Amino acid sequence: MCCKVVAHRFLYFNYGILSKKPYLCAMKMNREIIRLAIPNIISNITVPLMGIVSTAIAGHYNSEHSAATIGALAIGVSIFNFIYWNSAFVRMGTSGLTAQAYGAKDFAECTRMLIRSLIIAVVLGVAVLALQYPIGELSLWAMNGNDLVADYFYTRIWAVPAGVILFALNGWFTGMQNAIIPMVVAVTVNIIHIICSFLFAFGLDMGIVGVAQASVVAQWCGVALATILLFAKFRHTFVAVNRKDVFDRSAFTRFFAVNGDIMIRTFCIVIVYTFFTGISARMNEEILAVNTLLLQLFTLFSYMSDGFAFAAEALTGRFTGARDAVSLRRCVRLCIGWSLGIALVFVTAYLGWWRELLGIFVDSNQPNASSLIELAGSYIGWVIAIPLACSIPFLLDGVMIGATQTRVMRDAMLLSTVAFFALFYGLQPIIGNNALWLAFTSYMFLRGVFQYFMTQRLENIYKV
Image: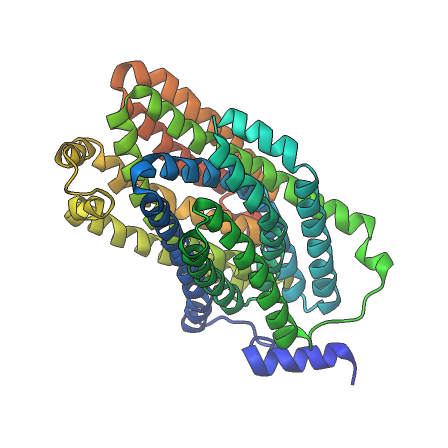
């Protein structure tokens, strides 16, 4: 029996999605959306937990100098966030192209995409290690990092290749319509990180360097687990491929074109977020603290919304590859409905309980706690509006990745970034911090508006 027949039988009996009739029933489509969205939401929820634990360790390791330790950890984490954000194109590019090959039932191309993405991830990871000293010294200079930050950086840098490899594997799993394995890996990585952080920081008296070492151990354990699950779940789908097809110039050209667009898009996001924090700090300490707190509420919403964006990403790629325009339309429409529903839930929560939610992030024993909450109330309207402004743009990002319309996503992001700076500098002398929030909210909303009209009201997406 040929490999392709085995692969078809395996996927049919395990997933029930390769029958000749496409999914046209809304109920079945909703099940598919939830099946992909929920595991991604669970994965996202584990991320802030790890950050909370790391910060708690930094605050309790050396109580006499807790502020300095927490600050050093924050700087170190920011440096690695920048590295990982700019490496995320490996996941996004892999996801869309793999999903299209999966939808077309081209399992040879699925296999080739796995190999290509892993090659790119390994090369990128090794390059970061080879350039760790210039990257480290430049980052320490730019962030005004001290010796403690340097120790953290040069310890954690050895986790980067593993992190990028996990990007590639998670992108491939998403393209193959499997959200469970990335969830299992993410939860396992975070549990290992938390346990090792306590063990290394306190048991071995390593402080935040121990937290960095825990990242190295956890990320490489994640790679090992993901590899085991890869072969356990998908070995029947692998097809023998030759090296010439793997390194096909046109395939790599398309892969790099998609990833290049995503890199530019991601760089714009990094610029806006970095500017938001930097300009808040220039206003005054109270505004910086309040804006940081309000962004935490925005982040809570983004964790939920991203789950449905991931589902849209996987399903859009699948139906695009399958040339199933009917299911694609239904998928996009229902995903938009889910995303708007989540937005309304958060708007309701923020309207009724924003004080209580902010209280989670503010120590009530601090002398300025009440004044911070009151000042936050002056700008809470923006946070209430942001879920409605962001829900569809976040969802459309997933649609564009799945359809590999990354040039549209790139151009929309560039225009939105220009609008962000124009609105801020045009209005900041008049309305102060409100100009920053207006610019930020508009930036999020305009991403979706531009993508919608650049694709002829999404009609270009449906032409499969």
